[in-house]
Image (cartoon, one colour):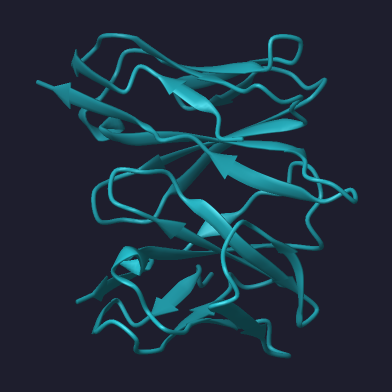
Length: 115
Length: 113
């Protein structure tokens, strides 16, 4: 049973550039959530996709955008990168539109470094 | 609002017990517990639902006090494999009937021989 996969594993960009991160959900899951985890902090919710639409959004600027494809995989795009965007970006998958108590399973993450 | 976890860090000898606490200022519908080892993804341990029972994962159990908006994670007879950072994630109504997981800053647990 394939778990959540993310690519790439590591990425180095410079300020002002744009980046795209990718996520494939666990088999049988149709909902993808993205989180940013700064060093020494807990994951912070960015947004969630279900049925190819953004359903919920955390407190992140419009520079952060996403997409979900018909096969449920998802992309996270960040434009105009800032030094503060350096973090581990985690993707989590679950089944069905977010309801109380839905278990989310995390991928290994993409480590983004902005220079 | 971010839940508050305590302690921030704890060191145990193998076989000792520990308690990790998670508290929120908001009314909670559920609490999720995860463990993350260095350089790895957070691994789901258990969910506690409002009105639900105390949960257990191997020798790790947790409780949820809805009135106090608190949850506690109990690690019994700790093993070296328990080392890692434990996060609680809380669900509360973020408006329009939507629910988001909000994580605490984590508790770093180190188990030594």
